[in-house]
Image (tube, rainbow, N blue to C red):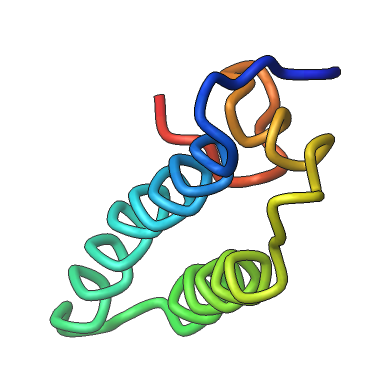
Length: 84
């Protein structure tokens, strides 16, 4: 999927912001689980793994990754941590 952009690199910058925003619910869920009397370690590890994966994607994403950036913008694509 090819996306049009009027300012070079703006889709890349917004994609980075969207990925960052997608981390917030995971951080909140993990922290809520940590404070429980009997936290579910598997859930904590799940949240942590997703956070690490999103962080790795943010670190390695480049403006030339237009297909991945398009997926980040696609609200129906749940594979890249899109926030609805």
